[in-house]
Length: 289
Image: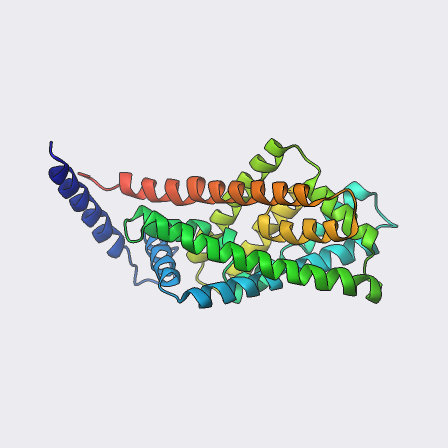
């Protein structure tokens, strides 16, 4: 079979998939969205993000990085306030109740968060509507914006927290060490699980028809991440960078190593276990393809 023939067959298969996705639209707003409806909406939203100006993407991502700082603000406050009442291990479970706040602000506020957008931005590539190169480019912009915003809010909170008496530098150091004090393979697998959950969060938020349902989904999934201590790269960037500012036990190498593993793990979790599996599950259900 010639390359031209193979390309023609591939094109016809993709056209059939696109047609099936395009027809996955229900007029009954009271029913749960179908797999095809969710996939269709995610691909449309992903393509809309690709079509935004680079500066718009960067600024929105920067905003998301800043807003994630409110989770860290509450984490530090809860850790400090309850430190005299609970052992340290229990404190890291207790902060799961406030961990979701930044995520709710970012996602409902339509700012671009790398982990929440990872699977969504991958779907246009899987459906041959965008290239792999464009995916890496937009990931780079989003990560840059998220990390820069996170670093700026870290500098602010590490300065203001002790002055307001809501947490101390010792609290910040403990939180940072709790994020980074693991073997590299543990951080990576933990990050894969966190990315997987964030990909599911994006999928489930799209499936929801009501704002209150979206809030519940965001809270539930991110609270699970917080309670389990899974490695989320963006809030983790704030935690470990803040820790590096105040603790000699966290140096630049530990910061970069932990951050790199978290980003890669989050990307793998969302891309493979959500975007790829959800997309292929839909494609395999189409007859004669």
